[in-house]
Length: 151
Image (cartoon, rainbow, N blue to C red; front, side, top):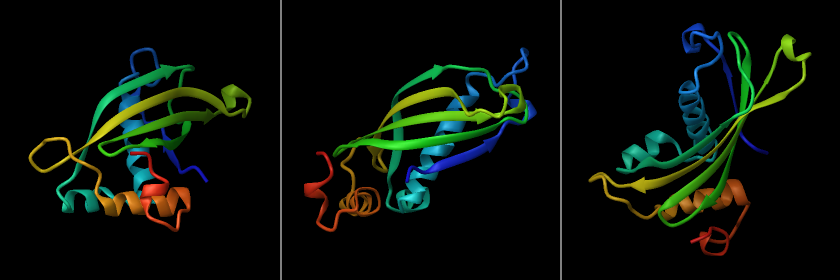
């Protein structure tokens, strides 16, 4: 099952045209990425306690439809690729509203590449514990990550 984050659009997220400002999607997608990692047992607290951070190094967003005040967004996040020092997420945001006749509409897509960073700010390898957790939670592997996680 793909983890999903549900958010309701607030008035201060709108621009002068009355729809969600494009920059706000950065926050929406970031929240959804960390919710997804947390659902796999890779919490932000656990990362910080181990001196790890994740820095976004590339971000592409396609804006496909407007989103308005009080619309509810459902954001699905897939951890597409996990390498030694980087992760790639694919994300989709959908909404349903009365203006859309109750149909779910894809409103934005994102592709995000991030790198693992150590306490001193330098890129580092993904910790083995996190690779193993990912293998168990996402891939259903019973063996170590060597057989299932891309290096």
